[in-house]
Length: 137
Image 1: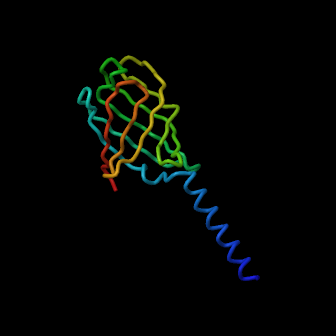
Image 2: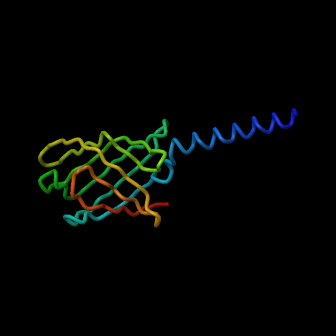
Image 3: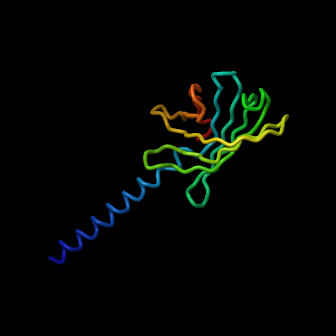
C-alpha cells in the first residue's frame, strides 16, 4: 500500500510538471537571429529574439523599407510570450521610423513551421505571410 501511494504521488508530480511546461510554451525554439524578405516590397528584414529572465522574449526587427514608414527604414520592437499552442504573441509591437520619426503600435504573432522556419502573421488584413529563416544555430 505504501509503494502504491508513493507511485501515485510520483505520477502526479510528473503529470503536473508536464502540464506546466506545456502551458508555458517552448521559448527556446524562437530564440535566435532570423532573416526574411518582405514579399510586398522586397525589403530585407532582420529579426533578433532573445529570452528574458521571466521566460518572455524581446524582439527587435530592422527593416530596410517599412511600408508604414512611407517606404523608409525603421525598427520594430516588443515583448512577447509563447502560448501553450506554441505561438509567439507580441501585443506591444512598436514600429519606429528613422526618417519621419513616426511611431506606431500593433500586435503580431509568430509561429514555427515544420521545416524550422518562422512565420509572421501580421495584424493588418490582406498582408502576405513573411517567412523568416534562422541565420544562427
